[in-house]
Length: 167
Image (cartoon, rainbow, N blue to C red; front, side, top):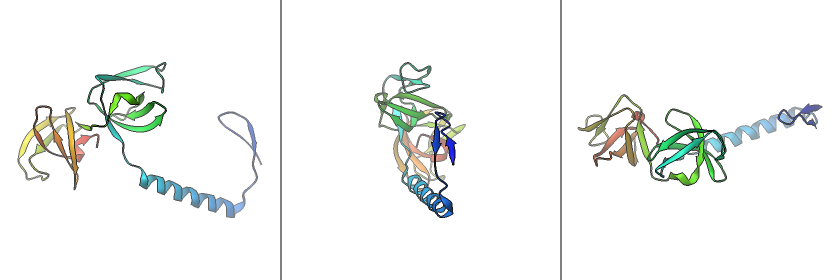
């Protein structure tokens, strides 16, 4: 059977594999996807430099799309040499140089109003409230869907993981 490579339009010859080979390839593909899916973990970073430029391609010659401020949380979704493809809290995918990111973790409030509590419990006292878009340092993740955070003013507490992005 003759086919064509869609990206380069070069003719490719391949044989009909038959049903046994097709099923074994399908089974191997499914197992590989399951193994990769279970082993993957989110890789969140924060902008570490005073600011970084976000591009549409992994090159300084790419179109400059946005300047990300220090502390902005991003999720690293791919790596290409010294460049990383990142996703921001709005879901936009862009590229930046890896050296501009830091391992320290910040989260951004995505709920209209997040209650930061004294303990990881909905009945605990509220130590502060944070509006949408407020940046909080991630101190530690907690069981049962909570995150321990610190505001830049020094207030520390616990926030529901569903109220923030970046963890």
